[in-house]
Structure formats: structure tokens, C-alpha cells
Length: 407
Ligand code: PMP
Image 1: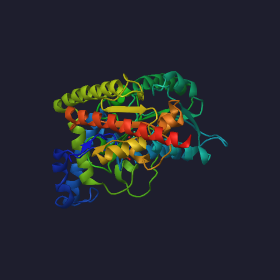
Image 2 (image 1 turned 90 degrees about the vertical axis):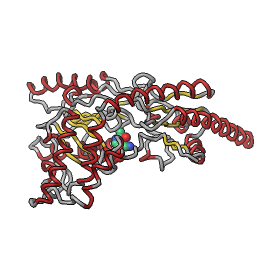
Image 3 (image 1 turned 30 degrees about the vertical axis):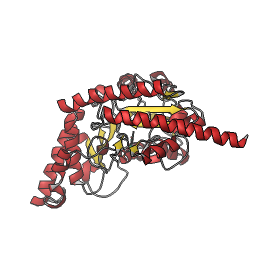
Image 4 (image 1 turned 135 degrees about the horizontal axis):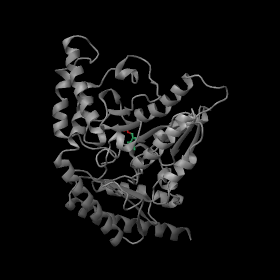
């Protein structure tokens, strides 16, 4: 059985070109990038080259790129590092900072904020998206308080693929921060988790107006366990991991040189004409998939806006069908799909993302996320659509029978 992979938002295969670039740095050029001898210098050169490629992609300076172990670490650094910076500066007794984020962020942002709140380190406002999965700029503006120090809004939601108005929020904050500077009020740092956006959307940090931006290489055909945090010069943030002086003293720990090289190569591939052409293809395939599923399966719905949506994301809901059952059945047929983010798929809790859209518990349980990538074909989608039709029908029949048994 030839397997079909439709879970590119969970992770992507490492591109052959990326792998080729990485290989020499495991055993041949294995030096520690902080060593002064030639082995170290060779490794440092490779790290610097990757840093330059990332800086070019984000239109940032090389010294604003901080390599981390992935977006989870970058996002933790944002929340905890901003608070550490706040608490290391002089302040009046009893003052507490305020953070704004959204209800449907990835758990690494959400839980870091919840813990900060529980530990009494910050007050947090969790802004809800509308039922289309979009955050309103008005709601962000209304949530700002005199003690707000950080706003974190994800660029593309990892479950439903909806695209948030980051550049518009950035523009608003630029104006607000200019006024706050005059009034000697604290600057509001603006962060976006761009992990699911990098492949498809503009990530020029000046055009977005962000101070901090997180990403992860394994979502862009690079290796796992490596990511970065863009940190605009002058941003109030302190490291949370103590140790060596790596990464401009913002992230201690020996450089993962092969992975950093892989990230550099993967990020460099995004703006190539081949990748850009592929995005157009992926968008067409996604539209084909959505159109057929909604037309051919009764009581099926698309979760999240159909317009402000990542080119590779289709997230469906089927009445009277448990998402988990659907995923398991598809897996038996060699089709890899997901109910939401891979990180929480071990839990049977309904998706916090779908609940934040105002869906009921039973609706939030019935979702199917299919995310496309550069190896997806129309032929694969045709097979998958037929399978989904078959499985949904079967599961509905079973749930009908089960209900009948109870009556
Ligand atoms: N943020 C988002 C939006 C994500 O999709 C993911 C990965 N599912 C993460 C953060 C965590 O990234 P990593 O796997 O690099 O820790």
C-alpha cells in the first residue's frame, strides 16, 4: 500500500538538498562553533552563513537572528524572557505587567502565558477570534492597558490555517508606541508566531512591524529540533536559559551546527521560483479538495475562513462523526491526517482552537485537518476524498446504530 501524507502542518520531510548540505557537519566538520581553533572556525562560518540567509529572508540584521531548538523554545523565550527583562528593571512596588495574546495560540504560547498568570507574574488578556477564526484589530486595541508590555498574535493558525492581520496590528502598535514614548509609558513589544506562515506569507519584519518572530525549520522541509527567534535590536528581552555566551547571550547552549545549516538552506529555498510555482499548485489542490468534500459529503463544513486561509490547509467538520475515529480509519488505509496539532493529538480533549471559534464540544471533536505540501498530487487527493466519503458514511452508520441500541 502506497501511503499518502497529508499532515504537512505537523512536519515536512527534509528536502534532499537540505540534507546534502547538512551531512558534512555531523562527522567531517564537527567542530564546536565557539572553539577558537580551525575546527571551530569552520563550524562558525557555517553558522554565520545560515544566519545571513535567515537575516536576508526576514530582511533583518544577522545579529537579530537567534537560533533556538524550535518554535516551542522561541515562544517560551518570548513570554518568559520579556517577563525576566521586566522584573530585572527598576519598578514601583506592586506593579504587574500585562500581556495580550489570543485564545487559539499554540499551547507553547498559551500555556506560558497561563503559567505567568498563575504564578502572579503577569495579567493576561486572551482575545477570542471571530467564528471565522480571525482576530480583530479592534479587539487587540481595546485590550491594551497602560501596563501592557507584550502582544503575541500568531500569523497563521496551525489547526485551521487562518491568517491574522499581523501587518495591520504592527501598524497600529507603531502609532500607539510613539504616543506611549511621549508619555513615558512602557513600550509594547509585538511578537508573532510565524511557524505556519513562513512557507507562504510575507515575513519581512519591517513590513509586518514585529519586534519578535518565531519559526521552526521542520515545517519548511528542514530538520527537526531547530528554529529561530528574530529579535529586533533594542527589544526588552532577557535569556531564560543560563550558560554560555552563544547567540548574542540570548540563548545559551552549544550550536546544533548541522541543523542550523539545514535551516539556512531550507529558508533559502522558499523564495526560489520553483517553490513559488509550487505554492500556486498547492493552492489549486487545496481548493479542489475543499470544493469536492463540501459538495460530496452531506453535513460537512469548513472550519475557518475560506479566504483568509493558508494555501495548504483544509480543516473539515462532519456532523455525527468523531474526528479521532476518522483519523484512525484513514490511517489504516495508509492516509496520514490529523484532528489538529500533532502536539496535542494524544489528548482526547476537544480542540481549544475550535472551541475558541464558538463551536460546541461535539462539533469541536469532529474535525479533520488535511495539510498539503510540495509532494501532494491530485491523484492522491482523489483517493483520499473517496476514502473520507466511505469512512464518514460508515462511522455515521455506526453512531446511528449505537444510538439505536441505547433507545
Ligand atoms: N507554533 C506553531 C504555530 C506550530 O504549528 C508549532 C508546531 N506544531 C509550534 C509552535 C511548535 O514548534 P516546534 O515543533 O518547533 O517546537
